Length: 522
Figure 1 (cartoon, rainbow, N blue to C red):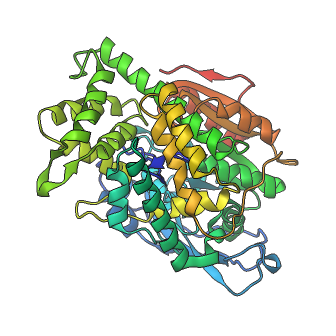
Figure 2 (cartoon, rainbow, N blue to C red):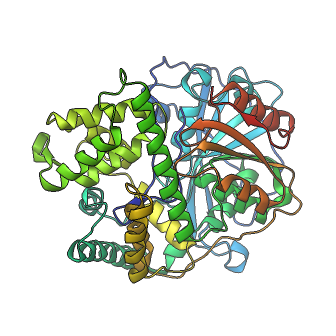
């Protein structure tokens, strides 16, 4: 039950993320305590050994119970706020939260497998919990949990790890509900003002510290985690933005790599404009696949045969007369748009999208709000997690260059013609970093010289990290081995037996797949 996040997507001008969530309800069972396995890896400056404490309340709070035969332990390590200041030896520290999951059936232990779900802003602690429920629920295979401790971590600024929080719930509501394609100059200027206010607010709260939430800083934290859990070398599973984080680690610490699986690859060498247009193309392609599915399976799609027409009509009606839900909340074009976005991250979401658009046409917006709110991590009371605060902080710290408001306005018009549903929103999404304060700290791009083979996984129907980025990341690293899934949705492992076997063989036995390995959709 994995959550995966793309690196960049517009939140009406904010950079947003999407989560994949599959429901699961299973009984809780906690195995007996096991003896700690001591490690001897040397730690980076300013870090120490993780001191674990049982924390079954973490999975209980997330899903109501822990997975059978799994023990959950938590620890916190301190890392330098700035690894580049005197080698990270300064006194200013950040706290990084870890969760270790160990199977009662563990045998022939290899070490730890570090997890990152992407975002940036996604909680690795939460994702590790979901992944612990096993292959029957979309989690990690037993073969992996028998050989590794599963380590989830919240990266700096995220969730439990010295979280950054500077965007108000009211501004998040305005952003999500805002017109996704502000055509008039007045609407566009209003969006510019909203992004400027958010940047000013975050700058006033954090100042020059905002640059410290960069991907390169987080990659240094990963090496501190490696040492703190006692591993000589790192085994890592990174999804979406997590592939960028993993690639950065491989460049900084190539000789500390044991095995890296980078699933839903981000091309680090593309700039913000190229990345945004790539996503516009990817989402347009995924939406076309959805509409073709509707046409071919009308019994499962209540908006068949013209699903594109139904969605376009829903957006136009929402612009003129949005449907009101409970408490007077309006299903504006923004909320409808993000319901669409949310549903394209997995093929399983297509039927939910069709049902939501059909219900909206009947005057019921509940399903639209449910899809959009799951995307936004918005609670029923209107509160948000710090997912988007962290997402902005990391993405904007990473981006060295600004695009320019005038160019963004021009691209909005150009991309609307090329990608009718997603082009304009992806263009205006670049406004967010235009007004982000502070210095930038771009990540490195280049080969991981000295690292072993790294498996780079791509899905041909991926909307958020389009497949074209997969070979580019592998080529940049110089040691990348491409594994292709001919499926739909965002990320591939562990979706099918073919993908699962290839990744497991690599993680456990260090046998990368043969060059050109391609797995069918089913």
